[in-house]
Length: 384
Ligand SMILES: *Cc1c(COP(=O)(O)O)cnc(C)c1O
Image (cartoon, rainbow, N blue to C red; front, side, top):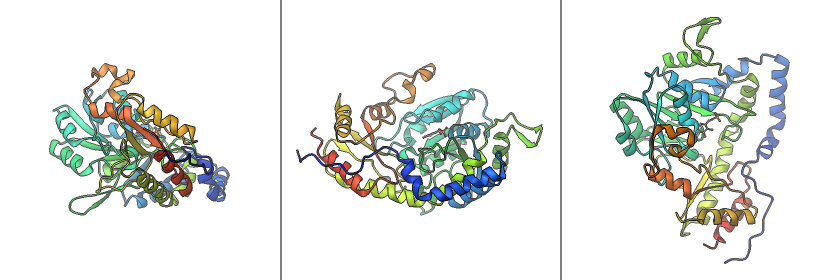
């Protein structure tokens, strides 16, 4: 075992104050402007942010809303599926992906994920499709695109909608066999994202957005997010009150300008981790799909599927001042809230195994290369 590595500056899983420090003056000016203007609901910054985000994503319609979970709910509402229609979701994801379907009286149908990239497995989706399927929700988990080409094809062949839950992969792209480059979130009938503070484009509270290339659907989503009204006090749909605050939009406009810069920093840290893990048995770095870029919302390794193995690594890291986290400890079909769906342990073996073996390492835009190198050394010093 190599000598115990010595720690640089303390390492955290997320360091928003350090990320915001260099742009503090811009953030304060934006904040001040909103306070002075006092248009707190649907003020000018909301429309400007939507325009700028649209340009960033190559031109889809952008509809802002209150959070990423509402975005998923609104996306499903825009499909007007019959009660009880089935919505295929990954068995390994954050709960919001299926919660949105469940609250609408739709039936979440988990499908297993791929063991290396964590994305929805197209073969599992094909097996889960029934005449009652209304939508497939793909999640670009941890910052890398699911197999968008295969999932888009499946959705088209079966006449069901594709929704992209892009809460974790804003700025990622997927390149098709024909060489077309698709921005994540713009390939489905609707794409959704979240501006939860810890996301790659995080606000200062809750926020979310929807993307669509269809002008009619964009108009419908805009109405659904605002009490189903086109004109004030004239309600054409049963909608939600789900709006992005002007304050959040103004601050997100500032942060959007730095998103690519921050993504590059995440990718540099990831390259350090990759190098440290190369050829290290028993510790698997996150696989890259060569068709997708990876924006590293998380850098997630897999340990061997043996009792106590992951706890041991997590303890070793903690003992050397390196925090880590398990996203996610339980697959969706084993969450108590979703027991009513009637699935049994063993039905989604890949998701179940990942829940036992994944560990996410610190990765954020202000993680220095020194710190990343240190984490790499701590990983190398883990005595399995
Ligand atoms: C964060 C997240 C959401 C929900 O976003 P909120 O803004 O917290 O409601 C949905 N799906 C995934 C995959 C997420 O990571």
